[in-house]
Length: 157
Image (tube, rainbow, N blue to C red; front, side, top):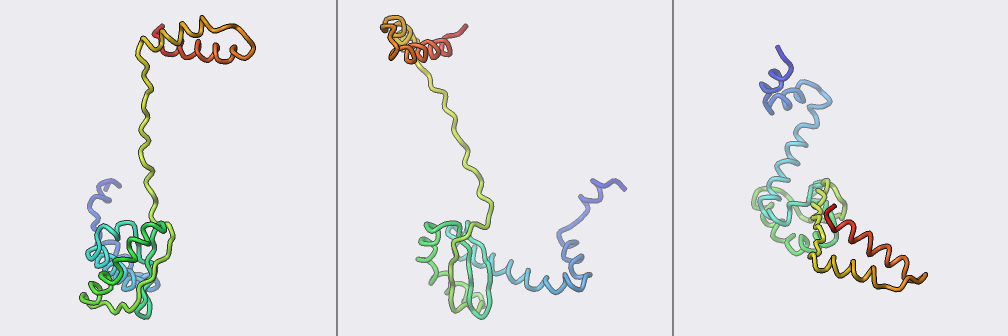
């Protein structure tokens, strides 16, 4: 059997079966399933606000959420009563919700828009003329050199 064929035939349930077969890992499975269900219920209650948040802990009626920055924390803090009520309606015994500013999810870098600065031909011609008309003094030499370099880059060879 080829390796790539073997991987395609695997199902997500195979991972839970693997965890159940090992004593130490099997003890973690109920807690992981519980946290996954709680995470899903939180996301269902506050889809937009909870997008960047994750559950850190849920013990003794206290839910601890991770938020990436203070701005998200401030927005989410306003919606905590709604979240607590929604979770209690789903059967979760949540008496208090705390927030901790801590980046958990990997932030996707924003795409950088590279804009090419375009000058019309008339502007390039004007800079060329300026570089020729400026007086050759010690103060003007760097400016003249910069103007000539810019004109050379902007004009097709």
